[in-house]
Image (cartoon, rainbow, N blue to C red; front, side, top):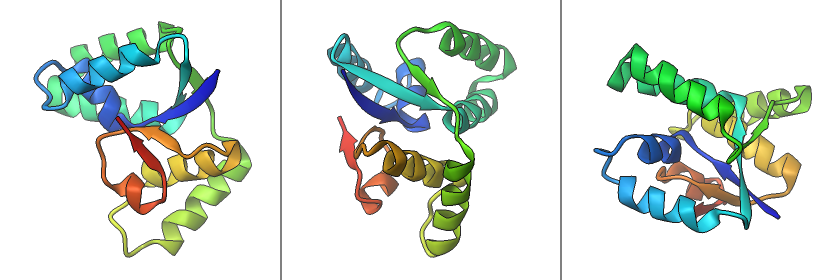
Length: 134
């Protein structure tokens, strides 16, 4: 089974029916079933909880967080020490980009895992050389 990184922008679109990308996100996510295991990093989980809380409220964020933690649809990947060092290095090296620290962590994990695909609606990942899907 192949792997695919998942970004906060994709998780938010999957979760929030009013998001402009919701229909595309749901259709794409359904197409992955049984073929691809989306990788959810701890930093993306944190960023997603912060975004969901800010936009939709704490109750909604807690419920979504519980759903994500219980879900078998995602492979949760903690960042190891090398990932954290690489994240900091990337963040410092590309200070001229509008990449968040979490975006940099996804690039570090992509490099470690040897994957170049990410489920996202964020153009920053194209700048990183990743294949942005859908």
